[in-house]
Image (tube, rainbow, N blue to C red; front, side, top):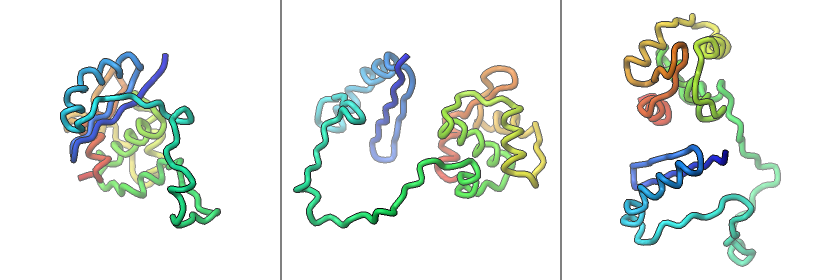
Amino acid sequence: MSMARVKLRDGDREFEFDGPVEVIEAQLQAWQAWVERRTDSPLRCRPAGPAREAKASLEHMQGLPRIAPDFRVQRNLTLEGLVSLKEPRLDVERLLVIVYYGERYEERTVHGVQDLEMAWNRVFPDQDWRSEVLQEAVEQGFLESVEPGNVTLSYRGETFVRDGLA
């Protein structure tokens, strides 16, 4: 099954769809009028990756600053790195950072209690794991129970972590 991901942005509003290509194509059709009203151009799909036509030529690059050959971009953020960036202070925040990392960087959609506890003990060895924190996060609308013993991040939880735990 082919997967696809689409992001639509209008000012501060952002919508992201990912899933099977057929589902995404249906979502694009549903949002087509909205996109066209804001861009004054028809919605067109462009291939991603190497198949996409490169627009930049050497002429466009003349006069641009050179990037040092030893410059490196860190692409693989670790869970510990994300915790360091987000600096969660409360147990619910700590749990949400773990779940967010799993969904965003490990492409997990469901998180089992045992996996979350193992990640917690690895990243927060000085903080005792409390299973009640899962229920607190669900009650606050940050997590959703998808089946017994498994949770997933809600939209509210995702935006809460992405926007800096605020």
